[in-house]
Length: 514
Image (cartoon, rainbow, N blue to C red; front, side):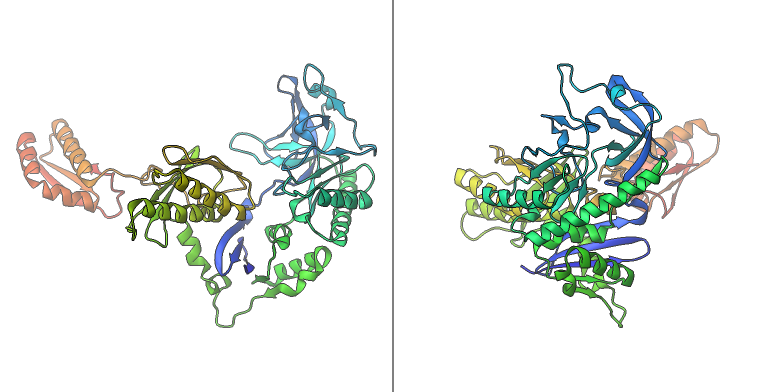
């Protein structure tokens, strides 16, 4: 399979398309006003301590204070807090860390019967503390921070405040796990921790060593910077979208990287010269004297627009419909134009198999996360259900994001989850319709027609004027003229003349009576 990264950078946003065999597989977008803060490191000041909820509020220079839980402050033996979300794609999929004999950089506290140590024992008011954004602010809630710093690299995640070694569960070979662990122990600084990412499997020792040196040097710069800084202060900003995508995808067999902006091209070359010099020769600066943009050159503008449609047609003539609700995403499978060539059961099976493959692709392309319910066409044969389930399971293996699927129920439903990794494509490109207010439906012209007549009748009883004007949308005006007999009856009833006026700019459900 040929894989290419197409990078479009301009003054307002960065867009990156992952192409697989010439087909758009994933799209990444970062807009200047929406640059993620997750992973940024701040020197903050403790402003308030709340023992009742085991948290403290930290001033990091934002409008809203961040909050730090007791469990995110100390490394507690036997808890899940040795590993927290760090921005690495598989950092949470680790085995229990293997504890080394090296002295850790911070004291460890064991859980007592009452649970975590009290937050007021861990931090003091006005204390300055180095923290990292673990979760970005949501609506009225401030950011959640952690004092367990983590710096993701190409093969490893560096944890300077831990002494643990974690290994991705996706690496199955015990021999490979042992090899990687020994390499990390050989090159790491005493008392520091690492998570070995899935990408490290079968990596050369020199590549692991290079990652350790790069991350250690990065941490030393951060540490020295925070010593001089006065809180609140931003100490470290994570690398931009282009470099993050490169970091995570280079190990997945990228054949070509094409970019259309000179300065970004230089950044990528500089990054690769340190991290992976062997990939420099696959980077190309796009130049086209005819004026065709890079995304148009690969027909990506059309593909992105197409990917926002709810309905996705299958090659057979069937289709799937993807609906986003507040708490989950529902996907419906239909035979559509496909009538099959043999019997009805085979037609259903073929549609469901094709749909399973396409659904896995669409989840990845649209970056749909959370709870997902798939309504396959009902199948009577258990062997057919098993085939569809296996097809979905196999197709999801191409997804770098963690998914969990349950077997098909008697109703033909599949319940699954996909880890949320930023905004979905729909959330990035679309906003709620101001006409239907998110329902996807508006009142019919006939319904509005009757509402207008009732409003005219009510207004006629209140005014002495001999003429009433109803200003409506063109579609409603047509319906009113179709109901001309009703208008005549109403004119006689209220003893007034009714005038219908059309207004093109009106939203279909809106009308005015004067």
